[in-house]
Length: 547
Image (cartoon, rainbow, N blue to C red; front, side, top):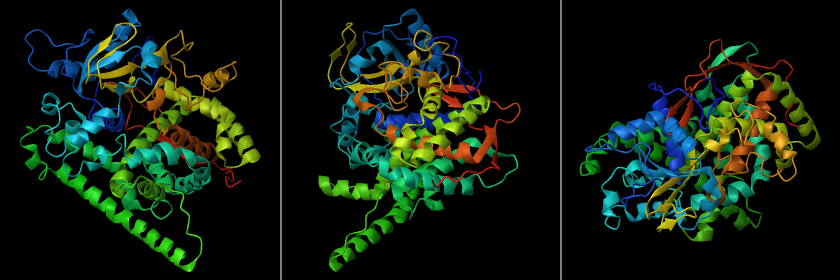
C-alpha cells in the first residue's frame, strides 16, 4: 500500500509488519491523544461482544493485546462490515474499550455522562497515596495514572490538561482567540526557520522528513508558545521535541516492574532520570524570561508608561493564573502544550508532503491559489481561510491517514444506556470507529487521494461549513467530534497552512526513487514510515513572502 493509505474496504488495507522504528513513533501519538482522551480499565462486565476476547482458561490478556496491536484495523473492519451499526468491545494495550460505530457519534458527542476529563480528576485524587482511587483500577497498569506514571517526578507534564487546568484555559481560549494576532508572527518565523533548517541549497539533496519537520514545527510553534526570546533556543527545542518520547518510553520501562517497586526503581532508571532532567532544564530556560517580564512591567508601572504587551503563551499562562487565582508550573504547562501540538502537526504535515509528492500536478494549482490570496490580503487569518484548495488538500490527507483508527475516546462517569440499548457501565472506556472516512457510500472512490474532494463539497448547498479542515463530523473524525473535539485544531490548521505556503512558494520536493511510503498500523495508530526521506531544493524563482 502506498502513502495515501488506500482502502479497499471499511478500514482499508495496510501492512501489519512492525519494525523497531514503528513502535516508538506510535507511542508519540498514543501518548499525545491519551493525555486528553483518557483510557482506563473498567471492572464491570460489558454486554457488547468482544472481537479479540480471551480464550477459555487464558489467564492473561497478553495474546489478545498482541492481536490488537497487530490486527486492530482488520478486527474492526471484519466486525463493522458484518455489523455496520453495532458496537463491539476490544481488549487493547490499555484495557477494554467499547468501540462504537460512527452512526452513534452524534448521540455521544456531547453526552454529559461520557467524558474524557473525568478520569484526570481521579488521577489527581490518586496522588500520591492513591487511597481514594478505586482499588480495582489502581492495581492495574491500564489507568492513566499508571500508564503515564504521573505520580512520579519526571512524568509531571503528562498530568497537565485536567478539566480545570490553566493549560486547557489557554488552549481553549487564548490560543484560538489570538489566531488573528499570531498569524503574521507564525509566517515570519516559518520563513526564518525554513532558511535555517531546510537551507538555501538549490541543488537536490535528501533530508530525513520526520526529524526535519519536527524541528521546523517545534520552532514555529515555540514562536507562539514562548515568544521570540526562546523560539530559537536550541536547548529548548531539543527538550520540547524529545520529552514526550522519552517520558513515554521511561514509563513503559517503569511499568515492567511490580507496582510496589516503582517508588524506588524510578529513581534509578536512566529514562526517568532524563525526564526529570528535562523538566528541570525547561524550568531554567523559561523562568528567567517570566522574571524579566515581571521586572519590565513593574518598571513601566512605576514610570507611568504602558506595560509591554506580549502575544505568546507565556503571557497567556500568567494572565490565566491571575484570573483564576491558581498557581501553575510554567515548565510543565509549556511541555504539555508542546506535547499535544508539535508531534500531531508534524505527522499531518508530513503526510501532506508525501501526498503532494505523489501528485505533483496539484502543486502548481496550489501555488497559484496562495499567490493570489496573499497578494490580495497578505498574512491574515482570513487569507488562510480563503486558501480553499489548500484546505481541501490537508483535509483529504487527514481523511485517508488520520492519527487514529478510532476517535472520540470517552469514559463513562455513570451507567449509560444508548438509544439502541447498548449498555455502557460506569468506568468503561468508549471510542468511535473512524471507518466512515473510507466508506464509498460517504466518499466516492475512498481509496483515491482527491485534492479537490472537500473543495467540491464546500460548493454544495449547506456543506460550506462542514467541509472545512477544522470542521468535525461522524464521517470525518480527524479532530474528534463534539464539545471535546481537539481544542487546538484551529491553531494547528493555520500553522500547517502557513508551513505549506512557505514550502510551496520557496521549495520543491520529491520522493526518492523506490521510497517506502507504506503505512504500518500499531494498534489503532496508522504510521507513515518514520525513516522516510525527501529530496528537496530551494526554488530558483523565490517569492517574497513579506507582502
